[in-house]
Each structure stands twice: as structure tokens, then as C-alpha cells.
Picture 1 (tube, rainbow, N blue to C red):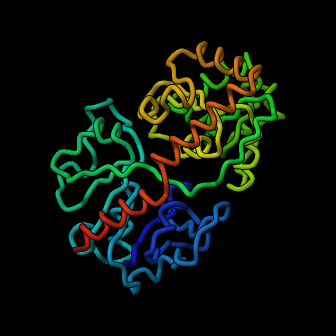
Picture 2: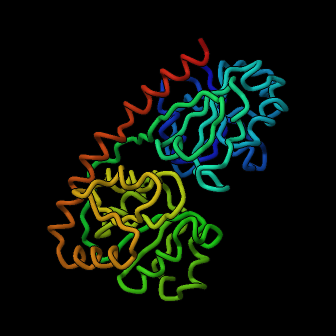
Length: 319
């Protein structure tokens, strides 16, 4: 199949484009959010082809995978085809509702011609999708291999734009933990955290290439997932697959994704601090939890299952 898909979420797309299809990825000269093209910090196969926006109307595609509300309009504008009407379409819902929890109608709730594919059962539970057909395709990632050393006595976190997304990303929780144990933070826009916690400045790492990120994360003693209200983060799954033990806020899909043998899940930051201190002083216990984390992640978030689920769905909507 020829799949039109915008580069929106780099980590998710890195898994998605590993499939057997031909992926048409829009690009413009500015590499704007609507024409970002291929990733530069992740490795994508040649089957993910950049196509200039102005040439999309002449590009034969079999299905479009939408990821943002404005993608509906972008497809019509640049291809002349209406998603769900003239062109089979799937909408990937990456996010939890931004409005009232459990009471927010999805933008496709009144339509039955576009399948909404949620990335977790929690998302599917919380969104009011009305009469839109829905499914759940859990995340899956390429296996980066077991890389854990835990030799650095710090707790690592990956949070993109932590200042702008303050409470949603659990940045206040992150800083509360960082005030009590050594922490390091990776992600886009993390340098802005230095204004709020000057002591963290030497330990803020901005937008590393994925291979370097995996290498550096795996040397930290444990992984912290501070998010309050977001879908299950791919960075959390990557950390587990690397073999890292996990400390996570008990919210959204995390309680199912992180069983007790993998790490500590709690709505009390003090409990996360307590566990972090234990692992900083007991490397063997940290390693044992990390090995269980890797086994769990490979079993539940493997790439083969993810790609198989997507093949089944794409074939169904284009049939």
C-alpha cells in the first residue's frame, strides 16, 4: 500500500515506517510542522519517501493516516481528496482528551467513515468517540537491545517541552524528585528548566539523536516517568526495553504498563523518591527490576505485533 502520513511524532513514526508499505511523507522548504519530511534524529528506511506538498495531488496513495485535527483539512487542500470520503483514512489518537476527562467528544465523533485508532485502552476509555468506529493499537518499538549499565548514580527522565507542558508533563513532580535525589533530563526544550532549577543546568540534555539518547539513558540507575495526563510515553517503553527499572506517576495507562516487578508506580512523589534512593544504594535490586522491565516490554510492546496490527487495520479500511 501507499500510505500518506505526516511526520508528527518522531518516535511513533519510527516504528510505523518499519512496515512493508510505501510511506509518502510531506515536506516543504522550511520543514515546517506541516512539511517536516523525514526524521533527522531517528533512522528511517528508504520506503519513507519525502514528497513536496505541491506534488501530493499527483501522488497516488491508497490510504491516509491522520494524527492531528488539521490533517483533515491538509489532505483535502493538498490532494483534492476528502479523508473518509474519497480516500480511506485512519485517525491515530495519540493524546488523552484536552477538555473534561471522560466527557470530551472526539472531533470525529459524528462521523462513521474514519476509524479512530487509539494508542492505549485508557485513551479509548476516556474519549467520547460517538459513532466513529474505534480500535486500539498499542505502541510497539524496535528493540534497541539490552544496554543497561546503571553505572551513573542518577535518575533519568525524558520530557519534551517541560516548561510549556508543566502540570500535564508532571514537571513539578520531576523537580520535586530532583530536589531530593540526583536527576538528569533529556528532551526538546529542556534547557528552559534551568531557570526553575539552576542546579539541574549541567544535567539537561536537549534533543539528542535516538542512538545517543539510548546510550546515555542506559547508564543512569533508573528511569522516571513524571507525566500526569498524557498517553503512554514511548520514552518509557524505550527505557524499559533498554533494561531500566522504572519510577512512574500512577496515571493514565501506566499502572497496566508497569507491573510491580518492573518498577514503582505511585501517585505520591515521596514514594518515588523513596524507591529512587533505594535503587541508588542497591544497584543489584535496580538491575533485577530492569531485567523484568525489558522482558515485559518485549512481550507487550514488540515491533512485530505493532506492525501486524497496523497491517490488519490498513487492509480493512482499504478493502
